[in-house]
Image (tube, rainbow, N blue to C red):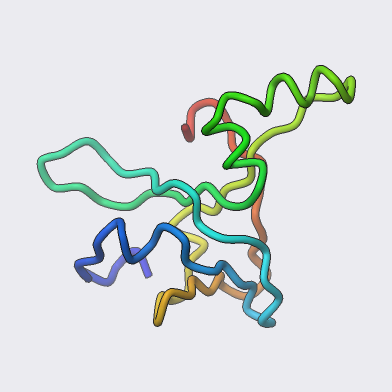
Length: 104
């Protein structure tokens, strides 16, 4: 997918389902990570409840209550096989991974 020069709007990606190559839904896109402009390129997708909690600045507090660190989950744009009809499909063997501070 990264080689394809397709124009997508953020409105199309945010809220889209994210599924594995086998069709298992792993969450919905909460935020889209892009390169600095002027030519923006998608580099990652923050996915699922943990991404919502991070966006609301609640993930750290929840982790403190549980006594464990919780990281938001993300998919690199390189892990995306295709996007169609509000569904992001990951490449075979690819899964969501914890977001690193440098990927955010």
